[in-house]
Image (tube, rainbow, N blue to C red; front, side, top):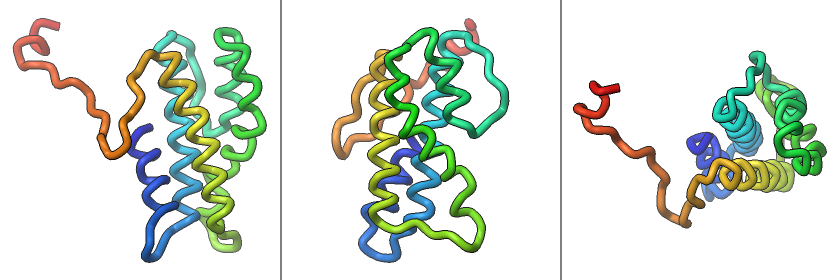
Amino acid sequence: AEGDYHSAKRELHALKHPNYDSACFHAQQSAEKYLKAFLQEFGIRFERTHNLMALLDLVLPRVPEWELFRPDLRELTQYAIAFRYPGQSADRPLARDAVQQCDKIREAVRLQLRLPKSIKGQRLTKKKHSTRNHRER
């Protein structure tokens, strides 16, 4: 989720050859992975899907106030495939909106999962487990 988030931000802010289609796609992927991480963390089963509203419907019994994200998730859902084929292209304002929508989902999930907020310029990493601890599991 974080990798896609950073890819979306990087493409949005690229000075040379920004790929706004990619920014939208990665914003959708980040939001999807964050929602799936939430569901996984709480043991809520889900089917293979890119439909963010379907994932939201599974989250709502636990966090009903996230209903307010439905319009953002509806828009982000289309970016899973919309710009991957010839015919449509995203522009900067659309990519900016997609990344902002992703930001909202990312922040909400990270808060619910009690994950630290990232610090600008600092990359979040997973704690590495020692070989001994890994073997003991």
